[in-house]
Image (tube, rainbow, N blue to C red; front, side, top):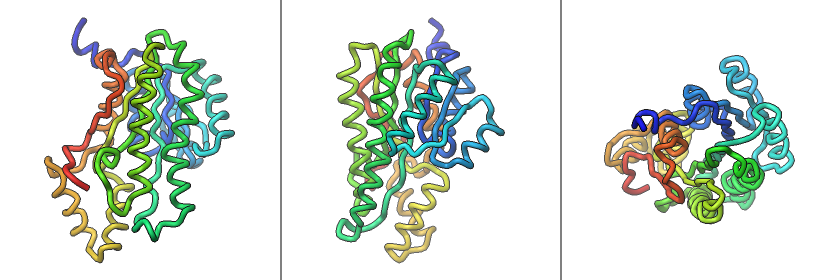
Length: 263
């Protein structure tokens, strides 16, 4: 088979992207659409969902709080109506969580981070698996973890803990679902250029009494390539794992980070 064809996901794939109306999720959704996929997204931001319907009508959407099981069930009702099934689930939804020492973080902040970054991935996976078992070419689940899911991340413990947990969930489901021809992997983005990372850098700079520029320089010094990665680079890795070229890859955590050496 032509190598280029191997690198392109099959046209007509039915794809669900959580947290897909902005940021990395939107980049992933648009990348799939460009390959001829049919894409449904969910997002807590109703305005972003409305804007998506106007700007990118090829992508359908549902406003939903991914940490609410009733909302998750409603996403799947909409998915069935719009796509009639599912081939690929991208568990992307997540929040940055609080910045602070473990003794300064409120329990409510910890619980919210776990609910969005970990519990939601369980909620979506459990409802997606029966549909993925029916995917004609086998199903795919990709979890968006983080480089903070392979390295310790001081003062960002709720975020890091959930991102490590996501990798464990992906590797465990790969074992569980392999006999059903469902591949499961995780992608671990590094420092991704965009508004969300700008907020993280600003919060850390404030905590340490540094300027934004000084804090940004500290982050870049920890990356072998000395640059941030882009949302499109993350999206490309997700397409690869969902394509025929990734058909033998399961149970892996792929770090897309420019080689972040430490956090």
